[in-house]
Image (cartoon, rainbow, N blue to C red; front, side):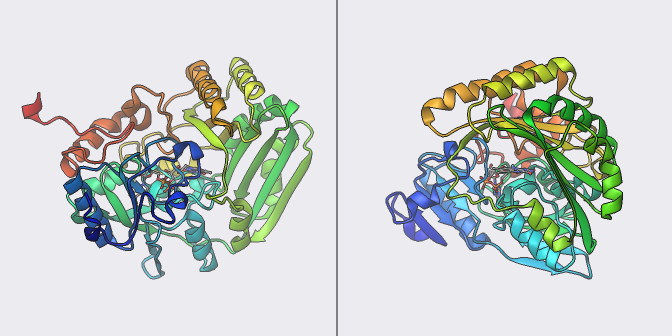
Length: 452
Ligand SMILES: Cc1cc2nc3c(=O)[nH]c(=O)nc-3n(C[C@H](O)[C@H](O)[C@H](O)COP(=O)(O)OP(=O)(O)OC[C@H]3O[C@@H](n4cnc5c(N)ncnc54)[C@H](O)[C@@H]3O)c2cc1C
């Protein structure tokens, strides 16, 4: 296996300088010891790496922004990581209202580049998440009620398949692959090198807000947020974060694509709940709105490990569920642990669940929770705590978000993809029949007749 010469791009084998930095993911519990990293500069480098992996019988992982939340997704022991983070072009076409981006861009780089040129692009709560991973699984965040999730805006892809061939997909060519790429999740069909998105104009200004309450008021705040947020104007996107008991608080953050006066009126039910400790409501040029909502989130210095789980809900959590939430927050040990809610509705419902691979469109809100640690000896306690919460909350929630996966979920195809899973398996069988791109909770190829 020493045919390193056939690998092109920036190649770092185990033992080479830069290896330790190369294997640093955002969540340290996902760091592995791959045999080699290839930092591809174009689709040809990716194709060479895929062929090299096959010739050498080495498992492959694709990587873009290093934000995978669970293990063995973007790194694997003894494997090859094909990292696209150096493919970073951004080409805006104002006439068409489209942008073509290299899949190695971070969300923050695209959002800020386009904001300066007067366009909206979907984002979540971290600027360093890679567009490579987030767009394939969905891409949820505070603009989703206005322009849909990131994958709703994805209209074309360039992908290297399991044989090393470069494939284009859009509404005319390989449209089944485009359908699957809009919510089917990272890593399943091939390694993507370029995405084409539709984009719309940004307002020149918008209103951001952040309201913070003492932790002790979280039940009252969560109740009101869950009643209010799903039905408020679709130009208002908001998430509610509730931290652990020891040192945490409750905090609602978001954006209204309109005036401060209207935002303040829309926020009244929330502002009148409990006794906020601090309230920020600010009208800003759109370029500063994205800075406010995407504060720095460096990858290489992030030391805390996380166990996440995610779901959807179609009614406010009743008191029994709030008691489970409280117990979880009392038991969590690290100050990054907590609950996160994001309001659903608006443009997300412009598409039917079967229009793209992203299935869960009818919820009232999205919910995720995580339990975090620094010392590896605390991993087990925290993983069990997050699992405990999922089991206890199950009567009040459904589904799960593939970008915030939980490898403890058993019947994962239906949980992540609902009734879209059988079609995803057919498309997997067409584009990756040998299941080369195979990892925990990956889409299994549909069985061919002769297999039955
Ligand atoms: C701090 C933080 C905040 C987050 N906030 C949000 C949020 O607000 N909204 C939201 O929707 N999600 C959010 N996420 C989840 C995020 O969408 C996923 O973790 C996503 O998969 C990360 O993509 P990545 O490219 O950064 O990660 P990577 O670790 O590089 O990859 C993640 C997955 O995508 C695959 N992948 C990456 N690039 C490619 C490619 N070019 N071709 C094929 N497969 C590829 C990988 O193989 C892997 O399975 C957040 C995650 C973190 C850590």
